[in-house]
Image 1 (tube, one colour):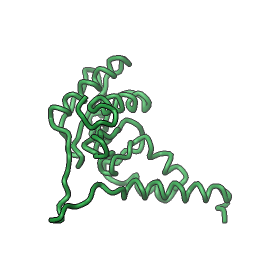
Image 2: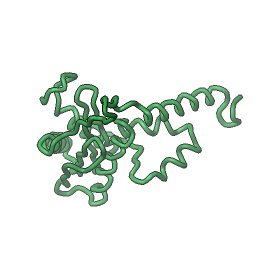
Image 3: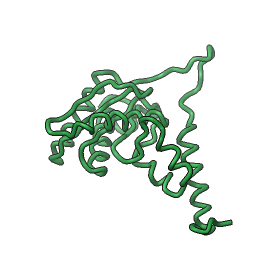
Length: 181
């Protein structure tokens, strides 16, 4: 049955969005070994610096000064740069975008809004989560099927931040090979 403001079609969309949020939050991150331990793969400081360089190059190409953060798979900061002229507040936003991606198993920050926009209760509740960013500029770094870190960018428009973050994240590994590119 529909809610007065959305009709039956809205309920279907809402259920789909709720499932997308749930699935993003509960994706398996790997199986435990025989001793019950999980192995974790992470970007190194050297790879994080390469991602910073790729982001800087992409930002320079767009003529937009940004802050760039790279974190490991657990969301811990590995490398950071504030380009000359980047807004000061963007420093924390870039770090929070990278953290948000890893905190939700690799969900890019630009995918949050479409999942939340029709879920009023979820939207108004989840945005109170510390460090969660629900707009573009956070991209996962994957090596094969493993989430190994994330890039967060802030200082331009949402579209520019997302473009720069994706360029940096995709610069590290050859498409699908898991080998450093």
